[in-house]
Amino acid sequence: MISKDIKEYGLSIGYTKVGITSADNFTEYVAEVVSRGDKYDILNFTTTNPVHGATPKNIMQEAKSVIVLIWDYFQNDFPEELKKMIGKIYLARCYNPLPGTIAYSRLQLMKSYLSNNGCMVNSDIGIPARWAAAQAGVTTFGKNNFAYVDDAGSYIVISAIVVDMEMDYDQPTMESKCPPNCKACINACPTKAIYEPFKLDPKKCISFNNWMTQDGRGSISAFIPYELRETIGCKIHECDICQDICPLNQKKLKTPKAVDRYIEQIGQDITLPAILNMTDEFFTNRIKPIMYNYVKDKRYFMRNAAVAMGNSKDQKYVKDLEIALLNPDEMIREYSAWALGKMGGQDSRSVLESRLANESSDNVKKAIKQALA
Ligand code: B12
Ligand code: SF4
Ligand code: SF4
Image 1 (tube, helix red, strand yellow):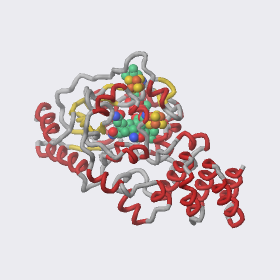
Image 2 (cartoon, rainbow, N blue to C red):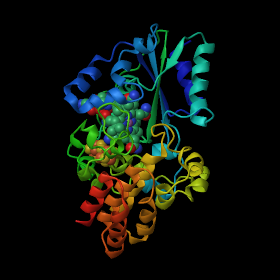
Image 3 (cartoon, helix red, strand yellow):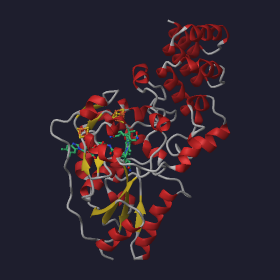
Image 4 (cartoon, rainbow, N blue to C red):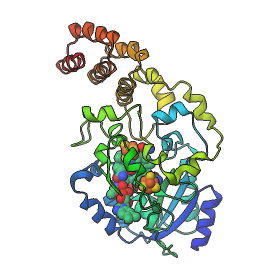
């Protein structure tokens, strides 16, 4: 099978770009991660550690080549209210997609094509995706760390398939197309997570704080530090700020698009009050179809909704937070108290004062006192 056929098949099933690189170890990628010190100890707790995937033979012993597939996930648009709260890659339901979805099936089609043509194949989300894509000549790097494709910009999801055949390899594009003086992404990041061009402190990134902060992840604490809570704004799942500000993305952002009908339909129900006090049914039918892969327990979305409400300072949420202050889950009560404190106003104060007398948990009592102070 020749590389040209693989690329043409990939394009025929809707991929935006297909590139091929050798399955030699990505040693420079590992050196890059190591150079960032303990900032990247978080990779030990990602679903599959990309440092492990940097040796493609760890994914499949017979690995000879890596086929990189780019999918432009911003072909349809999404309701504005949802884009304020949820990253577009999730609204597009394409990253690490679930069986039964179009995105999952597309990757399966590609794998079937390869195996029907005699390749042994394996795919794994742990292969260092941005590095592999630039090695395969399909993307360049932005100073915000993102992989960019001309026209689609950075709104792409990258998938990698390891195969046991040698192929024609593409010329790597380990470069950046950022204008030399541009720092728009660095300046726009509300948490200052991009500390210098091409370098991110992942633990400061909003995207880390609204999903990796879950119990049972080794040294990662479920507690979102107070100073970061304030900078999260109204983001409940991921953040697109450093992409949306980027001049290299403006053409894509401004291109007229049809609205995604499914998200338009279910999105009408997805509001902060509905998330804060959600039922299991709401979690299954409204949250899971979009925010399906990282956060398995509804309590973390409920927590994130409390943070977003507090940051909004919108008094209309006091009643919802009052209900959440009665939630059996201590974490929800604690974050709701924080949110009411952040919101301020006499109504919030009255709710906090009346709850203090009946609260049984010392942690929540402490949060209520801090909020009142
Ligand atoms: C861990 C992880 C996270 C962590 C840490 C992110 C990070 N930047 O490291 C957290 C939870 C914060 C996160 C958040 C997000 N993630 Co994430 N994440 C990953 C994961 C699993 C590994 C990333 C990684 O290797 N980090 C290690 C660091 C060192 O690498 P890097 O950030 O890519 O930085 C590169 C540049 O610095 C470059 N470089 C260094 N110096 C220089 C100098 C020059 C001159 C040049 C040209 C390049 C260059 O080398 C590095 C190696 O690639 C990948 C999937 C995968 N298996 O690879 C997805 C991935 C990076 N995530 C993705 C997405 C979409 C997101 C979010 C946008 C989700 C959202 N909407 O909020 C955010 C964006 C945060 C951000 N600003 O990067 C996509 C990115 C697609 C794209 N266009 O780039 C990926 C590739 C998943 C995928 N398969 O599509 N993520
Ligand atoms: S995703 Fe948001 S928080 Fe993370 S680096 Fe970009 S702007 Fe900053
Ligand atoms: S905002 Fe500017 S510096 Fe940042 S990625 Fe875009 S072009 Fe590069």
